[in-house]
Every structure is written in C-alpha cells, then in structure tokens.
Amino acid sequence: MIDVKICADSWDVLQQDAQSIREQVFIQEQHIAAADEWDAEDAISLHFVVYADGKAIATARLLQNNSVGRVAVLKSQRSLGVGKLLMQYIIDYAQPQREFLKLSSQVQAMPFYAGLGFKAEGEEYLDCGIPHRTMRLLLR
Image 1 (cartoon, rainbow, N blue to C red):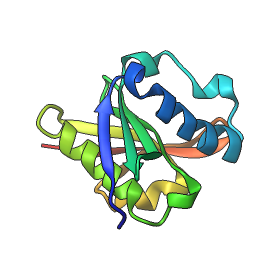
Image 2 (image 1 turned 45 degrees about the vertical axis):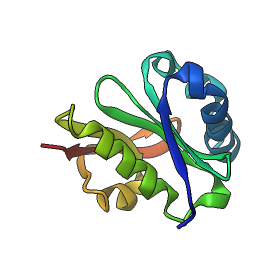
Image 3 (image 1 turned 90 degrees about the horizontal axis):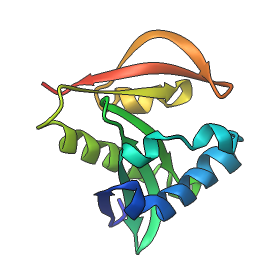
C-alpha cells in the first residue's frame, strides 16, 4: 500500500482536485456526459480526496441523505488498495453520526463494495447507460 493522506472538506476547498479526478474517470474514461456528472449536490456534500506525494489520486462525496457517491480512483492507482482505504475512511467517519450508508454501485464494482460489507438491494437499473444497483451498509 502506498503512503496517502485523506482530506475531508467542502466542495469550495476540494473542488479543483475532486473535479480533476472525476473528469478523468467519469467523463474521459467512462464517457459520461459532463452535464450528467455535475449537479447541485456537490455544493452541499462533504468531499473526500486521497493524496499520494501531494497528488490527488481518488475522490468521493458523502451526501446529506447518507449516500456515498462519485467514488473515483485514477486508473494508474487502481488495485493498490486506494479505493478500499478511501471507503473505509468514509465508513469510519460516518459511523458515529449515521445509521447507514448507501450507494449506487456500477454492477462491475459490486464485489468491491460487498467486500466492505455493503449489501445489494432492489433491481439493477441503468444510470448514464451503465448498469447499477443500490447497495447499503448498516453502521449500527
């Protein structure tokens, strides 16, 4: 595992780094339309950015409704444990104050979230043309 630092703060503080990662992962790599990527939730969510050697390498956000979203790790940093470290940080952050976390997982990422204790709910659906499924983690 690489040595990383995780910052949690507002969109105003972390926007530049979080936006860069999301542009690379979702817009360029997964071909999601920019209009679908950016929404009003950014301004009112808590954002997380993982840094390695001062460079932003992963991001996610925690919405007021307990949803974790926009989880993204730069392609060059995948399979190094960065995503797991980020998600565990968010789980640990949320546990004292929230009863559960939920997320909309791309179907191909479901085993990753299941490994963190998330359980699938409901039927598969398309979001921006990509198959997704809702997953939930009880914290208490």
